Image (tube, rainbow, N blue to C red; front, side, top):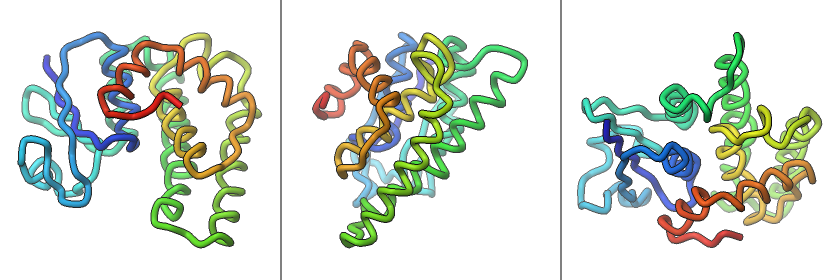
Length: 198
């Protein structure tokens, strides 16, 4: 099966991009200009998904999966080593992906929209509190054990954004970031999207 990931450089779709490289399967990527809604091949992205934002993952059947939580859950299903094992593994994974999406990812929205200094400080404090929740429950090298999975790569994107906006990341999560930065898949995705490894 050949998958096609529609992405924007440095957006949350970076997590899916890294995961697909980790999976070592066949896939394609196509860049999307989120302002114009035009893909690198000149297609109107809204014909792929009326939502107009990334990620969008097209299967070889033509089926399109949207929303980061759904795309990452699909990848974890197809590449089990990127998921969470055990009776409640899938539930725990969805729990963390939903938390990252609704509580952490969403908190960055106003920073990207240009919040003023006072607002930015409040938003940053909220993000730090949300990240600390994860740090306080970290007992292994990664969120779910000794190997990284889809949730870690999603968290990685959030930590990149935190660095961009000067938001302090708790030390245990910075350690995850450093481990992930040592992975060839992360460097390959960053290079492909024209991003720095910092």
